[in-house]
Image 1: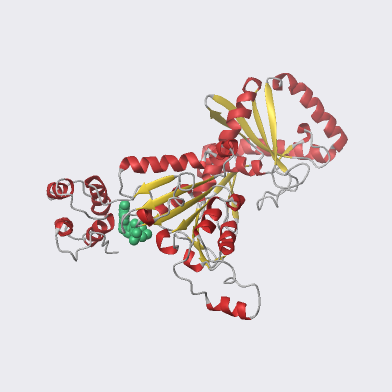
Image 2: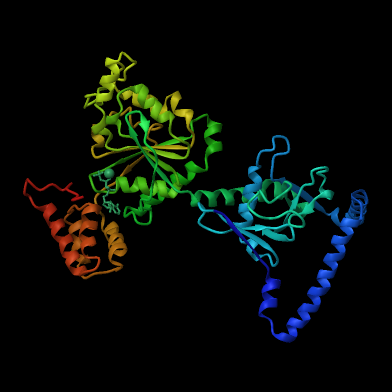
Length: 495
Ligand SMILES: Nc1ncnc2c1ncn2[C@@H]1O[C@H](COP(=O)(O)OP(=O)(O)OP(=O)(O)O)[C@@H](O)[C@H]1O
Ligand SMILES: [Mg+2]
């Protein structure tokens, strides 16, 4: 359901004014109304041909004033195909998010759709808004294009006649944004300003996007689930330099469409996350998805029974997505054979029915996986990230993780004292505790090991309780890791 409203500062001033000033306003509004009446009367009485001539004369009179300016028209619909012009929508969004519409002092049309979080403020035809980018001034206004003659002179402001109700529908004629600038700024507007408008609007759209999570059932992606993992780079405790490097790499990747095209590479990037259990590999994937606003495809390789099936799954992913294969060492026999081969019951039934069966083909092999990741089939989707995770990087075939396939290898490791302090700050909201010295000594001098998951588990118990008890629990775990007891397992994340 969409709703809309008109705001008018003039009207609000009238309602709230004291009696004498209300009288004065009454007089001026009467004066205004009579002028509106004259104009309406003239429009009905004067034949359209004469109106057209008068408009031309007016344009001629104004010409000396307009020759210093340049005007661009951004049509709502593509002139040839009649399709909605994306640029029009982006400009509409930009004028809202940049706050220009809200600053306008007269009438602003505001709409909100069910799926949108915020109210969208739009221009109506009665006003012009000024934007200033890098010291260059431009002016935006909205007009509608006459059906008979779409020359700029015959455009009329939206709202003078037709209703301005639901988006687009209330407009009896196609609309256009008119962008006015000084002639000297034309090049700047074409090369920089419009790029800025598009980038700002696209970035806003990206931030608003609701992420989706897909999982595969054999060779099909399930229906999507809303992906609302709270992990972000801010909540992730890790070496600050590594974190900054990963973020910079992601930023670079996102902005490098042109670069990938120029050097002739598919626009994709591979990350290998490795390290002991509970060091934040899955949390890092969620943080990446939240940062880039990419959908996540969680690919369970043990569910796929052929290289063709794998290829299909890769083909069926969308652009701007992350394909994740967790615990890659457990999913594939790196000699080229799968570890678990029992086919699903429906595949056996298919075989019995004599149809082309999945198990009649070869199983997923290392080369099949490599082909799907970066063979020619991998180019069916653009702007894609592939992430492998493993606890045992040493077990992986070098071909799988060679540069170009896995472009960045990220070692998620045990908690450093720095990461520990970050976790304490975020869980307990404290920056210091008397037990910090002992914890630092154990970590840095004794080389005691603890995973971030083990730390967070202990801190979580103390969120509403005693921080000292949490610190003691962490110290116990650290001392435990130094324990020569052969049954002790430092990798036990406890999650
Ligand atoms: N670096 C970290 N920063 C913040 N929290 C972390 C970090 N690592 C782990 N955690 C916490 O521990 C929990 C488990 O971590 P996660 O699942 O990301 O580990 P993992 O490395 O993927 O483990 P596994 O190898 O077992 O899959 C997370 O939900 C999070 O609360
Ligand atoms: Mg994990």
